[in-house]
Length: 517
Image 1 (cartoon, helix red, strand yellow):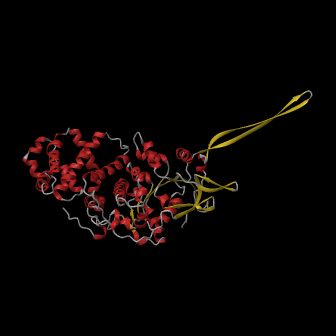
Image 2: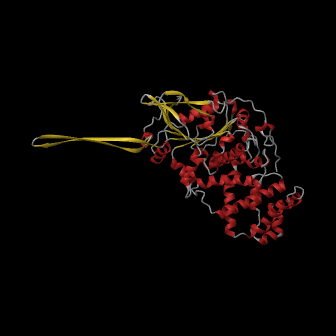
Protein backbone atom coordinates (compact mmCIF):
# COMPACT_ATOMS: atom_id res chain seq x y z
CA UNK A 1 0.00 0.00 0.00
CA UNK A 2 1.32 3.40 -0.94
CA UNK A 3 2.39 5.75 1.84
CA UNK A 4 0.25 8.78 2.60
CA UNK A 5 2.66 11.47 1.44
CA UNK A 6 1.73 14.90 0.16
CA UNK A 7 3.15 18.38 0.35
CA UNK A 8 2.65 20.28 3.64
CA UNK A 9 0.69 23.01 1.87
CA UNK A 10 -2.21 20.72 1.10
CA UNK A 11 -1.80 18.08 3.78
CA UNK A 12 -5.10 17.09 5.39
CA UNK A 13 -3.15 16.59 8.61
CA UNK A 14 -2.69 20.34 9.07
CA UNK A 15 -5.83 22.38 8.61
CA UNK A 16 -5.35 25.33 6.31
CA UNK A 17 -8.35 26.92 8.03
CA UNK A 18 -6.31 27.01 11.26
CA UNK A 19 -3.46 29.02 9.76
CA UNK A 20 -3.47 32.82 10.01
CA UNK A 21 -5.33 34.30 7.04
CA UNK A 22 -4.81 37.87 5.88
CA UNK A 23 -8.15 39.68 5.83
CA UNK A 24 -8.78 40.87 2.28
CA UNK A 25 -12.54 40.38 1.88
CA UNK A 26 -15.43 42.81 2.54
CA UNK A 27 -17.62 42.96 5.64
CA UNK A 28 -20.74 40.83 5.57
CA UNK A 29 -22.94 43.95 5.25
CA UNK A 30 -20.82 45.67 2.59
CA UNK A 31 -22.27 45.88 -0.93
CA UNK A 32 -20.71 43.55 -3.48
CA UNK A 33 -23.43 44.13 -6.09
CA UNK A 34 -25.45 47.30 -6.75
CA UNK A 35 -29.00 46.79 -7.99
CA UNK A 36 -31.48 49.22 -9.49
CA UNK A 37 -35.15 49.36 -10.34
CA UNK A 38 -35.37 49.82 -14.12
CA UNK A 39 -32.33 52.08 -14.26
CA UNK A 40 -33.29 54.07 -11.16
CA UNK A 41 -30.34 53.44 -8.78
CA UNK A 42 -30.98 53.63 -5.05
CA UNK A 43 -28.21 53.16 -2.49
CA UNK A 44 -30.48 50.96 -0.36
CA UNK A 45 -30.79 48.36 -3.13
CA UNK A 46 -27.50 46.60 -2.66
CA UNK A 47 -26.66 42.92 -2.32
CA UNK A 48 -23.97 41.83 0.13
CA UNK A 49 -22.19 38.75 1.48
CA UNK A 50 -24.87 38.31 4.13
CA UNK A 51 -27.39 37.90 1.30
CA UNK A 52 -25.07 35.55 -0.58
CA UNK A 53 -24.77 33.27 2.47
CA UNK A 54 -28.52 32.67 2.21
CA UNK A 55 -28.11 31.08 -1.24
CA UNK A 56 -28.98 32.00 -4.82
CA UNK A 57 -31.03 30.19 -7.45
CA UNK A 58 -30.91 31.57 -11.00
CA UNK A 59 -33.61 30.34 -13.40
CA UNK A 60 -33.81 31.06 -17.11
CA UNK A 61 -34.48 29.23 -20.33
CA UNK A 62 -31.81 28.33 -22.84
CA UNK A 63 -30.42 31.56 -24.32
CA UNK A 64 -32.03 33.72 -21.62
CA UNK A 65 -28.71 35.27 -20.58
CA UNK A 66 -28.68 33.78 -17.08
CA UNK A 67 -25.01 32.74 -17.30
CA UNK A 68 -23.79 35.82 -19.14
CA UNK A 69 -26.07 38.20 -17.21
CA UNK A 70 -26.70 37.68 -13.51
CA UNK A 71 -24.37 34.66 -13.38
CA UNK A 72 -21.44 36.65 -14.70
CA UNK A 73 -22.18 39.56 -12.36
CA UNK A 74 -22.16 37.32 -9.28
CA UNK A 75 -19.03 35.44 -10.38
CA UNK A 76 -17.14 38.69 -10.86
CA UNK A 77 -18.38 40.02 -7.52
CA UNK A 78 -17.11 36.92 -5.70
CA UNK A 79 -13.71 37.08 -7.37
CA UNK A 80 -13.32 40.81 -6.76
CA UNK A 81 -14.22 40.21 -3.11
CA UNK A 82 -11.37 37.66 -2.80
CA UNK A 83 -13.56 34.69 -1.95
CA UNK A 84 -12.34 31.14 -2.31
CA UNK A 85 -14.62 28.74 -4.10
CA UNK A 86 -15.52 25.53 -5.85
CA UNK A 87 -16.77 25.61 -9.45
CA UNK A 88 -18.56 22.61 -10.97
CA UNK A 89 -18.75 22.44 -14.74
CA UNK A 90 -21.30 21.04 -17.16
CA UNK A 91 -20.38 22.87 -20.38
CA UNK A 92 -17.07 22.73 -22.24
CA UNK A 93 -16.47 26.49 -22.28
CA UNK A 94 -17.13 27.25 -18.61
CA UNK A 95 -13.47 27.07 -17.64
CA UNK A 96 -12.64 29.70 -20.29
CA UNK A 97 -15.17 32.10 -18.77
CA UNK A 98 -13.74 31.64 -15.28
CA UNK A 99 -10.20 32.17 -16.58
CA UNK A 100 -11.34 35.45 -18.11
CA UNK A 101 -13.12 36.57 -14.92
CA UNK A 102 -10.06 35.68 -12.82
CA UNK A 103 -7.69 37.55 -15.12
CA UNK A 104 -9.81 40.69 -15.02
CA UNK A 105 -10.01 40.47 -11.22
CA UNK A 106 -6.27 39.81 -10.82
CA UNK A 107 -6.95 36.34 -9.42
CA UNK A 108 -5.29 34.13 -12.07
CA UNK A 109 -2.79 32.74 -9.57
CA UNK A 110 -5.63 31.58 -7.33
CA UNK A 111 -7.11 29.24 -9.94
CA UNK A 112 -6.63 25.52 -9.29
CA UNK A 113 -7.96 23.77 -12.37
CA UNK A 114 -8.48 20.04 -12.00
CA UNK A 115 -8.56 18.45 -15.45
CA UNK A 116 -6.96 15.68 -17.51
CA UNK A 117 -3.23 16.40 -17.85
CA UNK A 118 -3.07 18.54 -14.70
CA UNK A 119 -0.90 17.44 -11.75
CA UNK A 120 -3.79 17.72 -9.28
CA UNK A 121 -4.86 14.52 -7.49
CA UNK A 122 -7.44 13.84 -4.79
CA UNK A 123 -7.63 10.37 -3.27
CA UNK A 124 -10.96 10.95 -1.59
CA UNK A 125 -10.85 7.95 0.75
CA UNK A 126 -7.36 8.71 2.00
CA UNK A 127 -8.29 12.36 2.51
CA UNK A 128 -11.34 11.40 4.60
CA UNK A 129 -9.20 9.04 6.66
CA UNK A 130 -6.43 11.58 7.34
CA UNK A 131 -8.19 14.94 7.14
CA UNK A 132 -8.28 17.53 9.95
CA UNK A 133 -10.95 17.26 12.62
CA UNK A 134 -12.07 14.83 15.29
CA UNK A 135 -14.40 13.05 12.84
CA UNK A 136 -11.54 12.02 10.56
CA UNK A 137 -11.39 8.31 9.82
CA UNK A 138 -14.87 7.57 11.10
CA UNK A 139 -16.26 4.70 9.09
CA UNK A 140 -19.73 6.19 8.72
CA UNK A 141 -18.34 9.33 7.09
CA UNK A 142 -16.57 7.17 4.52
CA UNK A 143 -19.76 5.18 3.91
CA UNK A 144 -21.69 8.39 3.30
CA UNK A 145 -19.20 9.36 0.60
CA UNK A 146 -20.11 6.28 -1.40
CA UNK A 147 -23.82 6.80 -0.88
CA UNK A 148 -23.57 10.36 -2.22
CA UNK A 149 -21.99 9.10 -5.45
CA UNK A 150 -24.48 6.24 -5.67
CA UNK A 151 -27.37 8.68 -5.42
CA UNK A 152 -26.02 10.63 -8.40
CA UNK A 153 -25.56 7.39 -10.34
CA UNK A 154 -29.13 6.28 -9.69
CA UNK A 155 -30.54 9.60 -10.84
CA UNK A 156 -28.43 9.57 -13.98
CA UNK A 157 -29.85 6.14 -14.79
CA UNK A 158 -33.41 7.27 -14.08
CA UNK A 159 -33.92 5.23 -10.91
CA UNK A 160 -34.81 8.28 -8.85
CA UNK A 161 -33.22 7.11 -5.61
CA UNK A 162 -36.21 4.92 -4.85
CA UNK A 163 -34.30 1.86 -3.62
CA UNK A 164 -35.89 -0.20 -0.88
CA UNK A 165 -34.57 0.69 2.56
CA UNK A 166 -33.42 -2.90 3.11
CA UNK A 167 -31.08 -2.81 0.11
CA UNK A 168 -29.67 0.52 1.27
CA UNK A 169 -28.97 -0.89 4.73
CA UNK A 170 -27.29 -4.02 3.40
CA UNK A 171 -25.13 -1.98 1.01
CA UNK A 172 -24.04 0.30 3.86
CA UNK A 173 -23.24 -2.78 5.93
CA UNK A 174 -21.05 -4.12 3.13
CA UNK A 175 -19.21 -0.81 2.83
CA UNK A 176 -18.85 -0.40 6.58
CA UNK A 177 -17.21 -3.80 7.05
CA UNK A 178 -14.92 -3.52 4.03
CA UNK A 179 -13.74 -0.08 5.16
CA UNK A 180 -13.10 -1.28 8.72
CA UNK A 181 -11.16 -4.29 7.47
CA UNK A 182 -8.95 -2.12 5.25
CA UNK A 183 -8.21 0.41 7.99
CA UNK A 184 -7.60 -2.21 10.70
CA UNK A 185 -5.21 -4.22 8.54
CA UNK A 186 -3.50 -1.62 6.35
CA UNK A 187 -3.79 1.63 8.37
CA UNK A 188 -4.84 3.14 5.04
CA UNK A 189 -7.65 2.92 2.55
CA UNK A 190 -8.19 3.24 -1.16
CA UNK A 191 -10.81 2.05 -3.60
CA UNK A 192 -8.75 -0.79 -5.15
CA UNK A 193 -8.29 -2.30 -1.66
CA UNK A 194 -12.04 -2.24 -1.02
CA UNK A 195 -12.68 -3.80 -4.39
CA UNK A 196 -10.25 -6.67 -3.65
CA UNK A 197 -11.81 -7.29 -0.23
CA UNK A 198 -15.35 -7.51 -1.58
CA UNK A 199 -14.62 -9.53 -4.70
CA UNK A 200 -12.49 -12.06 -2.78
CA UNK A 201 -14.96 -12.56 0.08
CA UNK A 202 -16.50 -16.04 0.51
CA UNK A 203 -19.80 -16.74 -1.24
CA UNK A 204 -20.80 -19.74 0.86
CA UNK A 205 -20.19 -21.01 4.38
CA UNK A 206 -18.32 -23.97 2.90
CA UNK A 207 -15.99 -21.68 0.98
CA UNK A 208 -15.33 -19.59 4.12
CA UNK A 209 -14.10 -22.75 5.87
CA UNK A 210 -12.01 -24.09 2.98
CA UNK A 211 -8.21 -23.99 3.04
CA UNK A 212 -8.13 -23.26 -0.69
CA UNK A 213 -10.13 -20.03 -0.29
CA UNK A 214 -8.03 -18.96 2.71
CA UNK A 215 -4.83 -19.44 0.73
CA UNK A 216 -5.98 -17.32 -2.23
CA UNK A 217 -8.31 -14.70 -0.73
CA UNK A 218 -7.15 -11.11 -0.14
CA UNK A 219 -10.10 -10.74 2.22
CA UNK A 220 -8.88 -13.57 4.49
CA UNK A 221 -5.28 -12.37 4.38
CA UNK A 222 -6.36 -8.95 5.64
CA UNK A 223 -8.51 -10.53 8.36
CA UNK A 224 -5.39 -12.30 9.65
CA UNK A 225 -3.37 -9.07 9.59
CA UNK A 226 -6.20 -7.15 11.31
CA UNK A 227 -6.34 -9.78 14.08
CA UNK A 228 -2.75 -9.02 15.01
CA UNK A 229 -3.24 -5.23 14.97
CA UNK A 230 -6.70 -4.87 16.51
CA UNK A 231 -5.64 -5.40 20.10
CA UNK A 232 -2.83 -2.84 19.88
CA UNK A 233 -5.28 -0.34 18.39
CA UNK A 234 -7.84 -1.13 21.11
CA UNK A 235 -10.38 -1.99 18.43
CA UNK A 236 -10.91 -5.64 19.28
CA UNK A 237 -14.69 -5.27 19.28
CA UNK A 238 -14.66 -3.67 15.81
CA UNK A 239 -12.43 -6.44 14.53
CA UNK A 240 -14.69 -9.18 15.86
CA UNK A 241 -17.76 -7.64 14.22
CA UNK A 242 -15.90 -7.26 10.91
CA UNK A 243 -14.45 -10.80 11.06
CA UNK A 244 -17.86 -12.34 11.82
CA UNK A 245 -19.46 -10.39 8.99
CA UNK A 246 -17.03 -11.69 6.37
CA UNK A 247 -16.73 -15.26 7.64
CA UNK A 248 -20.29 -15.89 8.84
CA UNK A 249 -22.91 -13.31 7.86
CA UNK A 250 -21.85 -12.41 4.32
CA UNK A 251 -21.49 -16.04 3.10
CA UNK A 252 -24.94 -16.88 4.51
CA UNK A 253 -26.77 -14.04 2.79
CA UNK A 254 -29.33 -15.08 0.21
CA UNK A 255 -27.64 -15.39 -3.16
CA UNK A 256 -29.85 -12.68 -4.69
CA UNK A 257 -29.21 -10.25 -1.82
CA UNK A 258 -25.47 -10.77 -1.94
CA UNK A 259 -25.25 -10.43 -5.72
CA UNK A 260 -27.31 -7.23 -5.72
CA UNK A 261 -25.26 -5.40 -3.08
CA UNK A 262 -21.93 -6.57 -4.52
CA UNK A 263 -23.01 -5.56 -8.01
CA UNK A 264 -24.20 -2.18 -6.72
CA UNK A 265 -20.76 -1.48 -5.28
CA UNK A 266 -18.67 -2.84 -8.16
CA UNK A 267 -20.73 -1.12 -10.86
CA UNK A 268 -20.25 2.23 -9.11
CA UNK A 269 -16.59 1.63 -8.23
CA UNK A 270 -15.68 0.31 -11.67
CA UNK A 271 -15.41 3.74 -13.30
CA UNK A 272 -13.11 4.93 -10.49
CA UNK A 273 -10.85 1.90 -10.84
CA UNK A 274 -9.63 2.61 -14.34
CA UNK A 275 -8.36 5.37 -16.56
CA UNK A 276 -8.90 9.03 -15.79
CA UNK A 277 -10.83 8.74 -12.53
CA UNK A 278 -8.43 6.20 -11.03
CA UNK A 279 -5.48 8.49 -11.75
CA UNK A 280 -7.19 11.62 -10.44
CA UNK A 281 -9.18 10.28 -7.47
CA UNK A 282 -7.55 7.02 -6.31
CA UNK A 283 -3.81 7.68 -6.18
CA UNK A 284 -2.49 10.56 -4.01
CA UNK A 285 -3.61 13.86 -2.48
CA UNK A 286 -2.14 17.08 -3.88
CA UNK A 287 -5.05 19.43 -3.16
CA UNK A 288 -7.86 19.52 -0.61
CA UNK A 289 -11.12 21.41 0.01
CA UNK A 290 -9.27 23.43 2.65
CA UNK A 291 -7.31 25.17 -0.12
CA UNK A 292 -10.42 27.26 -0.86
CA UNK A 293 -10.34 28.58 2.71
CA UNK A 294 -7.11 30.37 1.78
CA UNK A 295 -8.57 31.88 -1.38
CA UNK A 296 -8.05 29.20 -4.03
CA UNK A 297 -10.77 28.70 -6.65
CA UNK A 298 -10.95 25.01 -7.46
CA UNK A 299 -12.46 24.42 -10.91
CA UNK A 300 -13.38 20.82 -11.67
CA UNK A 301 -12.95 20.99 -15.42
CA UNK A 302 -14.60 17.63 -16.07
CA UNK A 303 -17.69 18.93 -17.88
CA UNK A 304 -20.67 16.60 -17.93
CA UNK A 305 -21.23 17.37 -21.62
CA UNK A 306 -17.80 15.89 -22.36
CA UNK A 307 -17.21 13.26 -19.65
CA UNK A 308 -20.86 12.25 -19.09
CA UNK A 309 -21.45 10.26 -15.90
CA UNK A 310 -17.70 10.13 -15.12
CA UNK A 311 -17.59 13.90 -14.84
CA UNK A 312 -20.83 13.96 -12.89
CA UNK A 313 -19.76 11.31 -10.35
CA UNK A 314 -16.37 12.91 -9.74
CA UNK A 315 -17.83 16.38 -9.22
CA UNK A 316 -20.68 15.21 -6.99
CA UNK A 317 -18.14 13.32 -4.90
CA UNK A 318 -15.82 16.31 -4.44
CA UNK A 319 -18.77 18.66 -3.85
CA UNK A 320 -19.94 16.46 -0.95
CA UNK A 321 -16.43 16.33 0.56
CA UNK A 322 -16.09 20.11 0.15
CA UNK A 323 -19.47 20.80 1.77
CA UNK A 324 -18.57 18.67 4.79
CA UNK A 325 -15.21 20.46 5.12
CA UNK A 326 -16.94 23.86 5.00
CA UNK A 327 -19.43 22.84 7.68
CA UNK A 328 -16.78 21.80 10.18
CA UNK A 329 -14.37 24.72 9.67
CA UNK A 330 -16.04 27.18 12.07
CA UNK A 331 -14.69 26.73 15.62
CA UNK A 332 -17.40 26.14 18.26
CA UNK A 333 -18.47 29.25 20.13
CA UNK A 334 -16.92 31.80 17.76
CA UNK A 335 -18.97 34.99 17.49
CA UNK A 336 -19.98 36.69 14.26
CA UNK A 337 -17.50 39.56 14.56
CA UNK A 338 -14.54 37.24 14.97
CA UNK A 339 -15.63 34.88 12.19
CA UNK A 340 -16.16 37.85 9.86
CA UNK A 341 -12.61 39.06 10.60
CA UNK A 342 -10.79 35.71 10.45
CA UNK A 343 -12.70 33.22 8.28
CA UNK A 344 -12.73 33.81 4.53
CA UNK A 345 -16.11 33.42 2.83
CA UNK A 346 -16.27 30.71 0.17
CA UNK A 347 -18.69 29.94 -2.65
CA UNK A 348 -20.09 26.89 -4.39
CA UNK A 349 -20.95 27.45 -8.06
CA UNK A 350 -22.88 25.10 -10.33
CA UNK A 351 -24.24 26.06 -13.74
CA UNK A 352 -26.62 23.40 -15.12
CA UNK A 353 -27.07 22.52 -11.46
CA UNK A 354 -29.59 19.75 -12.20
CA UNK A 355 -26.58 17.50 -12.85
CA UNK A 356 -25.10 18.06 -9.39
CA UNK A 357 -27.96 18.58 -6.94
CA UNK A 358 -28.67 15.89 -4.38
CA UNK A 359 -30.46 15.38 -1.08
CA UNK A 360 -27.55 16.72 1.00
CA UNK A 361 -27.77 20.19 -0.58
CA UNK A 362 -30.85 21.19 1.42
CA UNK A 363 -29.13 20.18 4.66
CA UNK A 364 -25.96 22.04 3.71
CA UNK A 365 -27.83 25.19 2.77
CA UNK A 366 -29.76 25.22 6.04
CA UNK A 367 -26.51 26.03 7.88
CA UNK A 368 -24.55 27.74 5.08
CA UNK A 369 -24.88 31.17 6.65
CA UNK A 370 -23.08 30.14 9.83
CA UNK A 371 -20.49 28.34 7.66
CA UNK A 372 -19.90 31.53 5.63
CA UNK A 373 -20.66 29.71 2.39
CA UNK A 374 -22.40 31.17 -0.66
CA UNK A 375 -24.27 28.74 -2.92
CA UNK A 376 -25.15 29.77 -6.49
CA UNK A 377 -27.07 27.30 -8.65
CA UNK A 378 -28.19 27.98 -12.23
CA UNK A 379 -30.68 25.87 -14.18
CA UNK A 380 -33.34 26.25 -16.87
CA UNK A 381 -36.56 25.42 -15.07
CA UNK A 382 -38.25 23.61 -12.20
CA UNK A 383 -39.00 20.39 -14.13
CA UNK A 384 -35.24 19.86 -14.50
CA UNK A 385 -35.03 19.66 -10.70
CA UNK A 386 -38.09 17.42 -10.45
CA UNK A 387 -36.37 15.02 -12.83
CA UNK A 388 -33.05 15.27 -10.96
CA UNK A 389 -34.53 14.46 -7.57
CA UNK A 390 -36.74 11.71 -8.97
CA UNK A 391 -39.01 9.42 -6.99
CA UNK A 392 -42.57 9.98 -5.76
CA UNK A 393 -41.55 13.02 -3.68
CA UNK A 394 -39.48 14.72 -6.37
CA UNK A 395 -41.52 17.92 -6.42
CA UNK A 396 -41.60 18.38 -2.66
CA UNK A 397 -37.87 17.53 -2.41
CA UNK A 398 -37.03 20.10 -5.08
CA UNK A 399 -39.22 22.80 -3.55
CA UNK A 400 -37.78 22.09 -0.09
CA UNK A 401 -34.29 22.59 -1.49
CA UNK A 402 -35.28 25.75 -3.37
CA UNK A 403 -36.91 27.13 -0.23
CA UNK A 404 -33.45 27.28 1.37
CA UNK A 405 -32.08 29.48 -1.44
CA UNK A 406 -33.42 32.89 -0.46
CA UNK A 407 -32.42 34.94 -3.52
CA UNK A 408 -34.23 33.92 -6.70
CA UNK A 409 -33.21 35.55 -10.00
CA UNK A 410 -35.66 34.97 -12.83
CA UNK A 411 -34.69 35.46 -16.47
CA UNK A 412 -36.72 34.94 -19.63
CA UNK A 413 -38.45 31.59 -19.57
CA UNK A 414 -40.95 29.75 -21.70
CA UNK A 415 -41.78 27.10 -19.13
CA UNK A 416 -45.24 27.70 -17.59
CA UNK A 417 -44.49 25.65 -14.47
CA UNK A 418 -41.48 27.81 -13.67
CA UNK A 419 -43.21 31.07 -14.56
CA UNK A 420 -46.26 30.31 -12.42
CA UNK A 421 -44.01 29.26 -9.54
CA UNK A 422 -42.03 32.50 -9.90
CA UNK A 423 -45.23 34.56 -9.85
CA UNK A 424 -46.47 32.63 -6.81
CA UNK A 425 -43.15 33.15 -5.04
CA UNK A 426 -43.36 36.92 -5.47
CA UNK A 427 -47.01 36.79 -4.44
CA UNK A 428 -50.28 38.59 -4.98
CA UNK A 429 -51.69 41.89 -3.79
CA UNK A 430 -55.22 43.11 -3.27
CA UNK A 431 -56.19 45.39 -6.12
CA UNK A 432 -59.37 47.31 -6.89
CA UNK A 433 -61.11 46.66 -10.20
CA UNK A 434 -63.65 49.20 -11.42
CA UNK A 435 -66.25 48.82 -14.09
CA UNK A 436 -69.06 50.97 -15.48
CA UNK A 437 -71.61 51.19 -18.24
CA UNK A 438 -74.14 53.40 -19.97
CA UNK A 439 -77.40 52.60 -21.69
CA UNK A 440 -80.13 54.62 -23.38
CA UNK A 441 -83.82 53.75 -23.43
CA UNK A 442 -86.16 55.27 -26.06
CA UNK A 443 -89.71 56.24 -25.12
CA UNK A 444 -92.51 58.19 -26.79
CA UNK A 445 -91.88 61.22 -24.66
CA UNK A 446 -88.14 61.20 -25.26
CA UNK A 447 -85.12 59.16 -24.20
CA UNK A 448 -83.78 58.08 -20.83
CA UNK A 449 -80.03 57.79 -20.22
CA UNK A 450 -79.03 55.22 -17.58
CA UNK A 451 -75.56 54.97 -16.11
CA UNK A 452 -74.09 52.39 -13.73
CA UNK A 453 -70.71 51.87 -12.09
CA UNK A 454 -69.20 49.44 -9.63
CA UNK A 455 -66.04 47.85 -8.42
CA UNK A 456 -64.57 44.93 -6.54
CA UNK A 457 -61.41 43.94 -4.72
CA UNK A 458 -59.44 41.08 -6.25
CA UNK A 459 -56.07 39.45 -5.62
CA UNK A 460 -53.71 39.70 -8.59
CA UNK A 461 -50.08 38.69 -9.13
CA UNK A 462 -47.57 41.44 -8.48
CA UNK A 463 -45.73 40.08 -11.52
CA UNK A 464 -47.88 38.22 -14.03
CA UNK A 465 -46.50 34.86 -15.27
CA UNK A 466 -46.44 36.06 -18.90
CA UNK A 467 -44.02 38.86 -17.97
CA UNK A 468 -41.26 36.26 -17.58
CA UNK A 469 -41.69 35.29 -21.22
CA UNK A 470 -40.94 38.82 -22.42
CA UNK A 471 -37.73 39.68 -20.60
CA UNK A 472 -34.78 40.69 -22.77
CA UNK A 473 -32.20 37.96 -23.35
CA UNK A 474 -29.17 40.00 -24.36
CA UNK A 475 -27.30 39.71 -27.61
CA UNK A 476 -26.85 42.31 -30.32
CA UNK A 477 -30.58 43.04 -30.74
CA UNK A 478 -30.94 43.88 -27.04
CA UNK A 479 -27.66 45.82 -26.93
CA UNK A 480 -26.21 43.00 -24.79
CA UNK A 481 -28.57 43.78 -21.92
CA UNK A 482 -30.30 41.03 -19.95
CA UNK A 483 -33.49 41.64 -17.97
CA UNK A 484 -34.07 39.91 -14.66
CA UNK A 485 -36.57 39.98 -11.83
CA UNK A 486 -35.08 39.36 -8.38
CA UNK A 487 -36.94 38.12 -5.34
CA UNK A 488 -35.40 37.67 -1.91
CA UNK A 489 -37.31 36.24 1.02
CA UNK A 490 -37.76 38.81 3.78
CA UNK A 491 -36.25 41.64 1.71
CA UNK A 492 -37.91 44.99 0.94
CA UNK A 493 -36.60 46.77 -2.13
CA UNK A 494 -37.03 50.49 -2.84
CA UNK A 495 -38.62 51.39 -6.16
CA UNK A 496 -40.25 54.36 -7.81
CA UNK A 497 -43.84 53.89 -8.92
CA UNK A 498 -46.05 56.66 -10.30
CA UNK A 499 -43.61 59.30 -9.14
CA UNK A 500 -43.27 58.16 -5.54
CA UNK A 501 -41.08 55.77 -3.63
CA UNK A 502 -42.57 52.44 -2.64
CA UNK A 503 -41.24 49.27 -1.05
CA UNK A 504 -41.79 45.89 -2.63
CA UNK A 505 -40.48 42.35 -2.31
CA UNK A 506 -39.01 42.15 -5.82
CA UNK A 507 -36.86 44.30 -8.05
CA UNK A 508 -36.26 44.49 -11.78
CA UNK A 509 -32.64 44.79 -12.85
CA UNK A 510 -30.75 44.96 -16.13
CA UNK A 511 -27.45 43.06 -16.29
CA UNK A 512 -24.86 43.96 -18.95
CA UNK A 513 -23.36 40.95 -20.69
CA UNK A 514 -19.90 42.52 -21.06
CA UNK A 515 -20.01 40.80 -24.41
CA UNK A 516 -16.74 39.95 -26.13
CA UNK A 517 -16.32 39.02 -29.77
